[in-house]
Image (tube, rainbow, N blue to C red; front, side):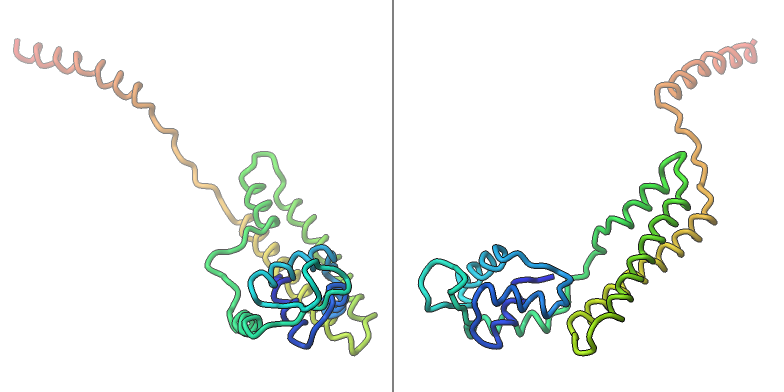
Length: 204
């Protein structure tokens, strides 16, 4: 999630103070992602440094310092909104890595691990569903965030089900042990005199 661009979006509505930015950010996102006020000031200071926002209230950031978006900030925001998120490689998801590791460890019941994570995901989905039911109809930010989380968790539940089925039908391919090169050389050397002896007897 880009806090930088979310703050630019809030400032595109008009000048705002740092504390106001934090409060509006949390309200717009359904208070799912709390934002530290120090992070707001740090992010806005960088935006100011990059010429994307400006302030007429002195040098030091603080609760009474108002910021406004600059034309360059508006262009940055518009470009970010139009640009799809980078998806060249799958993200390193911790759950996926756990299952990949567990599948290779001897003595580990992978099916049991999958079911434990599945139960946790289903319980989390239920919490977001109850959150939606208790939310006000006009709390658009909370409803959209809850929907996104439910769909994301549902996708992981489906992946766990698929992984469980795939692992149950997977038969590891036995790989014969490699013969060390020293042993191979020793075998070849011991066979050579025998071949020479056989040739000599044939000559006699």
